[in-house]
Image 1 (cartoon, helix red, strand yellow):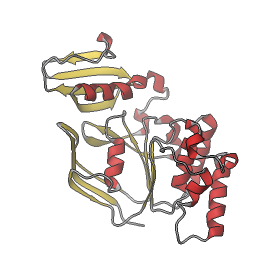
Image 2: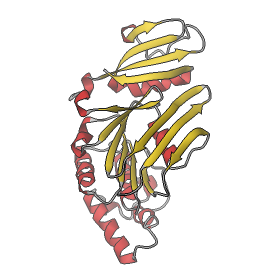
Image 3: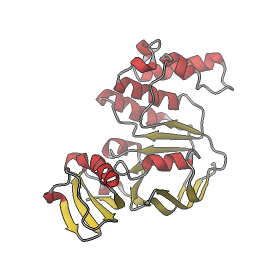
Image 4: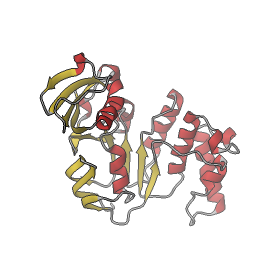
Length: 275
């Protein structure tokens, strides 16, 4: 069945901001997880910690020598062609013929055959995101981790991605970080929300069918009483404000940008949850 990923008493600071606060959670084998929350809440940081790519933490993360295939939220531009880039990622224990077949299959699925000889730096944002997904799928690994995989994809590409995820049963776990919930419910994930420095289990019934009408309640604290608010915070958003605490109701489409602006302005994120 495989070993679980065990997170115990994880705490992570960025300066004075405590991003995670004694998080304890077990990612059970044979389970797909959807980790949601606005940008700045810690989804990408959690992925990097689990993969062992980020230090400066207290607590422990036990991965039991599991291997990871990872698609970051953005793939950097590279001078190689798409084919050269993908071939370099094929496991050494796979024969050249198997490697070519695997690449060709994935390039066909995502409509990338005509881009095989195109340099990565010359690709559009949407096409580069498809290559980003393919480079994760082409690797041999126990755990697949996708950070904001729907970003930049058109409707057809999203459908191709979801269909491919439904067909893949060779991973012990699939972990997906996304602020978009509804399109991914079809793969029947266990939903976790990063909120208040914790991983909070959610249910699909708590999500809205129309994200444009969904909102987040955001609570932050401020080291300096009555600090100047970012210009994007309107009076209609403010639910409560005291000398040290600010509670906002923010439309989901604005939440990612606003959380980043609050943190950059010096506020400390405490709680984020959908309402």
